[in-house]
Length: 353
Image (cartoon, rainbow, N blue to C red; front, side, top):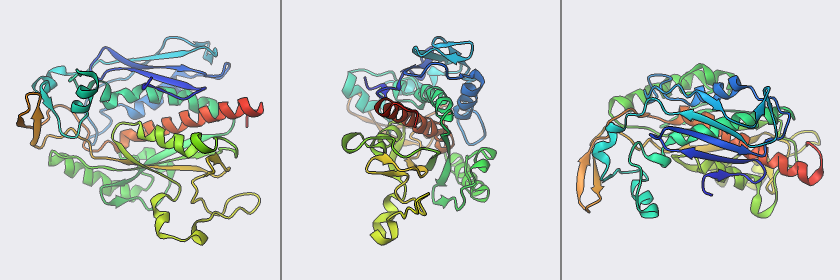
C-alpha cells in the first residue's frame, strides 16, 4: 500500500508518467462538503507544466474528471475518484535511456525492487504522480475551510538566494511562487542561468497552515510533526524537512527557543505550531528542502544494465528548478495530513475541533 496515505482520510494515487492517465481515489471525505470542480482545477493549474519559461514546457492541460463520490457539487461520503489524462507525453524522448540508469534518478533502485521498470519519463517515480495528491488536497482544503483552517505556501530559497519577507499574497504573482517580490526576481535569474547551462538548481519550500486549533495530532508514534515529515518526504525530490525553528534552533539556547504563551497566543513559534506531537493553536509551519532536478541536459556519466558506463545528456522537457511546482504539492500534503488529523480528533472527542 505504498501509494496510499492517511488512516481516516485515505488518499491513493495511481498511474505512470507516460501511461494513459494519472489520478487518485479519496476515501473518507465527509458527506455534504461542497466540492467545486473549478477549485480542484485551479490547484491542478498551479501544479501543471508549461506555466512559464522557468518550468517544463510539457503541454498538459491537466483537466480533471470526477468519476464518483460527488453529486450536485457535494460529497456523498463515498470514495471520490478523479482522473487526469496524459495528452502530451513524448515517450520517444526516453528510448535511448531504456537500458541506462540515469544518475540521480530512481532507475536502478526501481529495477532492484521490482525486477523491471517503466523507463518512459520515470514511470511511477515521476513528479507526474503528484497530480493526484494536488486533486486530493483540494478536497481536503474545502473540508478544512469549514472549520476555519487554510494553507499557504511559497518558495523561500533558490540556490543561495533567500526570501526575507513572507507576503503570501505576493507568492502567486511571480513564476517562482516566492513571498518576497524582490527575492523572486533574483531567484528567477538563478533558475534561468541554470537552464542556460543545461543544469538545475534546488531550493526550499515553506508551507503554513493557519487556524489549526489546539489538540490535533497524537503523541508518541503518530505525532503530527512526524506525519507531516512523512507527508513532505513522500514528495519526489524532497530531501529534508524542518518544523518551526528547525535546524536553526541547534545554535540557540532553550531560553531563546521556548515559546511563551500569554494565555491567548504564542509570542514566538519555534515549535512550528506543534508540541508533544499535538497542535498547540499556533500556525503550523513546515519547510521542505527540494534537491536540484535530476533530469538535466548537461553530459553526465551513467551506468548501463550491462554493467558498463556511458555518457548521456537527457533530452526532453524538464524543470531547471522544480520548487515553483512543488509548492502546490506541499500545500496539498499539508492539507491532507491535517484533514486526517481533524477526522481522528473528531472521532476521539465527538466534535469538529
